[in-house]
Image (cartoon, rainbow, N blue to C red; front, side, top):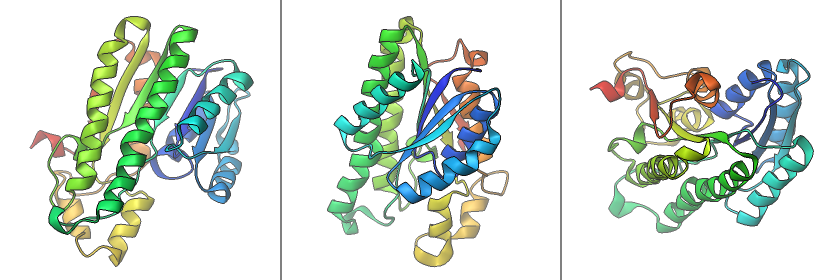
Length: 254
């Protein structure tokens, strides 16, 4: 994977940041994007220590809900590094839990904009670039909520089901173009989002229940889905496309 270039949206924290570490250690140039300039700049500084074989890391402030900004981000990567070999569409939010009749319509719209339209915009322009250069690999973050109904999470789950649909359908559309498109579906993982929810900020979240819903009786750690993402991007997964890889402590096996 050395001398390749990757984009990771939402790459300054959690699973995105762990993925960046692993790619940099393999000699991949990594561009992380996100909305928070201070967090992104700090992450890029920390990530530089993991770079091998001359790999570079940089942060670009970007909002995935801005299509023109997404295109400019990708064009900038190509101008600087020559190609976009890998893309990890990781940026997402979970803004509320509860029953659908009591949900906030404006909050749901924001989740749709980031979790669905954000992935759509990124894939649209990532695939177009990969078509120009003759191939590439994309991994979308899908979640167990994209494969199952999850109590008190109907709005979030619906956005992740949409990402699964985009992943599988686009994989079929571009399978003959040397563009592989897969997804990773983590179980509950100790990311910034989960940390906030289990801190007591969300009355619908029971920290113990988050652990016991997985047959392994624990939550995942960010490096675990990151391992799966890196494998799916690599040539070791050269005959794998349209697949949603569950990294969920056995949840999907139930």
